[in-house]
Length: 484
Image (cartoon, rainbow, N blue to C red; front, side, top):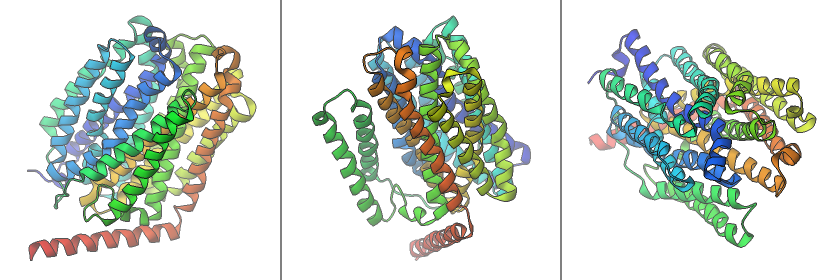
């Protein structure tokens, strides 16, 4: 078995390209689907909660299984889990394209997500173990983040073109050739790797995570339409699951979620920032897509073109953010990200930016800049301070935070919008109904700014060093005990 650190520079770049392809698959699927929502709504007679579930069923399963996938990959082999993820994701995409109704589509989106959960955290773990130099790793993560921008740029355009010319089912077809090509390249070029010490499975912790995320999301999405007696039990289950998870994981020798990670202020901050930034992204795309097509009456392709002022800055700023993280640390990129995202939210919340082409484009550019700068510092902070043996678990926590954030963003903003629109048409009441949603997205941007500033200074870095030393010494003691 070839060690990751022994790969030639050319082979390392190829491994990075393959890992980025997996991220492109998972990210593209969401951006493409957002543009297709109005067409899907008409074809399948879907309600606003139904549209929320087509997105959240996917991100919810991703969030629930990412940590399991990361720890499993560290234990049985990263290439093995990554390959299985490509197979399941590609199969799920095929099933989505054949879905006869909304319920079937939601189920098949969950199948997709099972495969997707085996891709992103495992790919990030492969990258972390391939690029061991901090500067090279920061640049690699910057390239990784640029793929999100590429998916935001290409997704709406590809989705709009396919929806207008063929229909919404065709958006899932593009995953088939890309998934198969990535599978062949992975088997050919990505070496197998695993953590030196295998971590045991944690089925109880995994079930608690599923119960927490699932019940919380259901309660939020259904709250505007269902009586309190129907949603309150799910909220209670979410609270009980969170309490049980914290108690159980803190007592377990090899937990699914190592709570010791959160003693590091940068790691905890990265988790909060990831949830906030991706909640803003989920809500932003959801509101923008419905406004452009259901209010302005644009076609899917026209809506995709309108997304370019947001997508291109994300694509251009992500590698710049990676270079800044490598040369100056995460603080400046996080401040830029938080400031730009907050400004974008305020533009919509205070000045109704969607009512004018100029302010709409300005809001999109600001959000794109902010989101472009946020990915690299979050990812680098999450994995760089942790022992490489636990890279899969650490990166999975960061990935989980992203998916949970996007799930909550769509759920909360969609619920607020549904409650505000009521029985009126989107065209008549959308701007007023969406304003609380824009204030929520403004708060998310402000959280990125404040938490980024407070968890990237000298004090925060000292907590990261202490946490890494404790984790390393704990691993050494465990290894010594096993050897004795």
